[in-house]
Structure formats: C-alpha cells, structure tokens
Image (cartoon, rainbow, N blue to C red; front, side, top):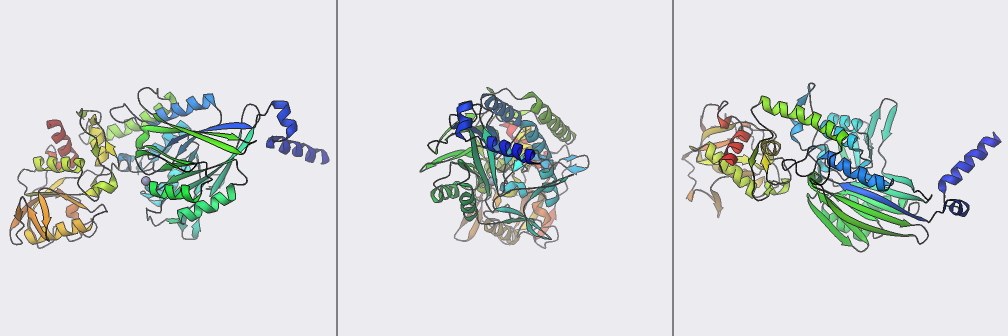
Length: 509
Ligand SMILES: [Zn+2]
C-alpha cells in the first residue's frame, strides 16, 4: 500500500508540471498558448447564401486546422443553436426534429463547450432535455438553472450510467509540447430573456462576479462565455477588468469591443464568421496576452467531409419534406439585392425592407384586399438575409407557413385590431399592415380615415384569424364584426401558403 501511495504522489506531482525539476528536464518555457475558435448564434447546419458561407462542416474544418497547429484548441458555441429553425416544424421518426439536426452536426464537428442562449428554451422542456442528452460536447451554466417539480437544479445530461451535471464553472488543464501546464477557467452566462416555465435564472453580473472570484486564483486565465446584449458585456468587462476575454453571442452582426484589457468578441450569426482568439499565458510573468482575428467562413474553407455527411443526411430529410408540400428548396429566387433585415427585435417593432417586401407579396397575391395584415412573430429568421436568396431561405424565414385568409370585416373591428397590433410592439403580435398610418389617434388607410361602419376586405394569415395571437383573441370567425369569410385557398393557388406567395413575388421581380 505504501508503494501505491508513493506512485500516486509522483503522478500527481508530475501532472502539475510546475516544479523546477520537471521544467529543466522538459525545457518547460512557462509559456502556453490556447486557441479558442468561437461561433455563436448558429441556426443553420448547411452553408447558407446558396452554399457560399457558413455551414457546420466548415466550422469543423476550421477547428481541425487550428488543432493541427496547436492541440490546445477549443471550439466554443456562445449560445443559440437549438432554435429557431425550419427543422422545428419538420417531423422525423414521428417526432418534431427541433434542434436534433444541429446537435448531431455539432457532435460531428467536435464542439468542446457550449452555453445556453435564449433560443435554447424555445422548444419544450422534454425536447430541450433530449437535445442536451444527445450532445457530446460539454456545457457550462453559471446563472441558468432547471426549474423542476423538485426545485431549482442545475441542468444535466441524463446518461445511462448517471447524470452529468452542468457545472457553474469549469477549470480546464492544458499542457503543451514542452510540458508547460496551465489552467483555463470558464464560466457561462445567459441573458434572462426567455421565460420558459422550466428555466430559472440568477442575475448575470452577480453570477459572473461569483464565478470569477472562485476561478481567478486557481486559473492562469479566466474566459467568460456569454449570451447577452453587448451593453451588458461591456458592463461585465468594466466590473471584472481581470477577465481574459469575453466570448459572446446574441447579436448577429459581429461585434468587437475593447474595455480596458478585456476584449469582447461576437462572430456573425450562422457561422458566416468565427473569431479566433489566441490566449498566450506566461506563467513566469503571470501575464496573459490575448489576440483575436475574425475569420470569414466562406468558399475558401473546404468543409470537413465527416461532418458534411451528417449535414447532408439532415438536409436530405428536410428537402424531401419541402418537396412533398410543393417547394424546391434549392432554387435561387433572388440573385442579388440588399441584405434584408429579418432580426426578431426589429420585425417585432417596426417595418424593415424585409417586412415591406412581404407586404407587397401579399398585396400581389390578394389583389382584391383593401389591407394586408401579418404578425411580426411569423418571421423567424432573426437575422439578415443576404442574396442569393433560395426558396429554402423563405421557408426558414416563415417556418410555420399557413394559408392567407381573406375576410370582410367592419371598420370598427379593423381599428381595434390595428390598435392592438401597435400595442403588441416588441412582441410577436406586433402587426405589419399595408398603407396604414396613425395620425392623432385616427387610423388612415390609403390616405382615408378608416370608417367604423364601412366594410373592408382584409388579407391576413390564417394563424392571425384563429384568435391565438397575443391580445388578439377576438380576431376570429365568431366575432360579430366579421361580415364574410371567403373560401379557403387550395393548392396550386399561391394563397394556400404564405411562402408560396412570397416566393412567387420574389421571382416576379
Ligand atoms: Zn440570443
């Protein structure tokens, strides 16, 4: 037994590798570099922009490239990847796919660490748990917990041989070729935005301070992986100036901020880019030097073939599904044009060039209508859409589809609907309409005040006419203000699916 203790002692000692004896033997230079490959807000497994950019198989190739140069390379996902996606509504083996395709692709790509974004909780508790259980990568969750019947607990992967509990912080021991050993601390922060009933949050900043206090003395570098607004990341950097880096997500259009010694990085959504963050730890001087560069993931990156097989498998399932309902996902329908703004927070509070195009498409599809209405929440892209635009891009923008309804309603009901649509600003129930204007409390349609007693023909999504939209429960067939409901539109009438109407319009331009 004595001998065994002695052996263990030696092993423990040498694994620390900071002793002078060890360093002289292996020429430990006391310097270690770790490379962080960062992506965030990835909703598409396949390359987008007609295959030109992004794609999880290209992320995989990028990781491999850096891993070959330096075994201390970690691929990080800073939140938002289960959802939104067209795969949310597609079925596979009797179940909705809901992010399964993404986890499968990420597993193939060799992701190392992930954190929760707000969109991870768009799907049900059961589905989120299944995705977590399927994930081969590690998670860290410092302020995001699982609200269960038995109380608030850490999220955990449920495996056959027991649960793997998500840590609030992680310490990764790294070792390089000359024997330098360094410890990298990680914690993960999520904005408390998605109020799913199975999630509980603690204050992001307080949780960060707590984690940093625990990690700072035992680690050579401490990296925060965050999914929150850039303004909150800036506050975080100010409050914890000793952080090595903030690897962030949530904004989709690439951000980089320097606050004191702390650099905040966010890559473009959908892996249009990745941030490469090199952390050079000098154990002798106790100093850390961080350099970062934005890597555009485009046709210059050859996809990793093993990951591509997984991506193609799921894309094939999706395309077969679309074909069965009349779409040709791969067809380019708009070869060039400006980036269309389909970001959630924008389309839920104001018009954009994208919502205006959809209004025009519906006007063209329903020429007899006096007014077009659709809810901002029907658009689920949460991103800019860049040409070339394919049918698939329209499907992923409007994943719910649904027919256009035409109804004749009284002016008084129309005014009531428009008022609620405006009151819903900031939520999915914010309404987009054609040719309307509110002036001093009076709604105008095509320059004329809406007459309470007149009858207007309205073209709207069937969802909106179901009474299921927030605060619009009264907008349904039984409302006495509904005068006439026109016949349902059936395929091949483009009004049978809002996406067919949109695709047809874009092709006509
Ligand atoms: Zn987000």
